[in-house]
Image (tube, rainbow, N blue to C red; front, side):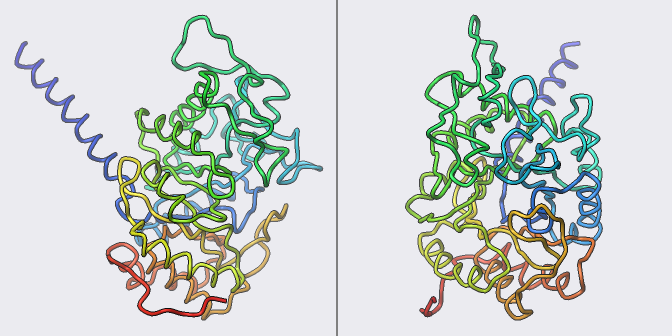
Length: 385
């Protein structure tokens, strides 16, 4: 009996050690995957998402693309009057937390959230990611929803108005979200309840928006990073966007996350692409690429690859056009992203993936450079328009 107990105990600690080793290797090379934003803006449905996930598994998984990410506003109802900064169209639970719009995500009905969808993604051999906004929604604060305290702190009854900081609304979605007061227990409890819910759903990747660059909220990033360390699920932590980010600013967050955007949104114009050369030079010179991050490494992120079949920024329309970049400009972009060791997140509709685009994003030489090159630096000085 004693021997059997000892073996069981040894097995238990071996599992804990294995889990710790796996967590500490998080993002050991720049992550790769597919993100819905460039092709669907915010209006993607469960059917569209699964169509794309299945094709990622079939065509890109063998080339290291493992994450499929639902970008922003998966909780917003797609009805007349709803757009990227509208107010009052979101689906929230009794605790003021965003939950999937059941009309667009039917598997979420009955309180399932994204758990059923995550299981389908995992069955494809892929990892599931979501986009989330800073703090708490204006809708939850207006409704003054109660806050779930997962630590069961005795005698505390908190509500959304106790934590919402209205003067710190998200600059580019001012009607939608605001910071939470992380100096009080209620604010920390709300953030804990959010990320515990994501872990319960089976989320593997979180893209946290409006907390970096011009919108820096180091307190919230720090709290979320600490929460993620304590979860029983490994979740890769990404920050977005990165307007006005410098290496000096990034030094404060690189150890707290696994990816962080160092530019604003990159769309399919040469002006957007060319702006990345100088930024890339500065971050490589500062030795920021592959630095120690959250339970693994962290990577400066040049944003998604807006090539293939796309939509328009902020659109209420799905994919309807091809990339405006020339073929040479697309080659240049993929080469720069690879040499900079940026995460590679393809943004085009997988159902319209043409041979040129497929061969470009799976080019074995570029992918090898992206994963295994080191000490990458600008070889000579160029003029940056």
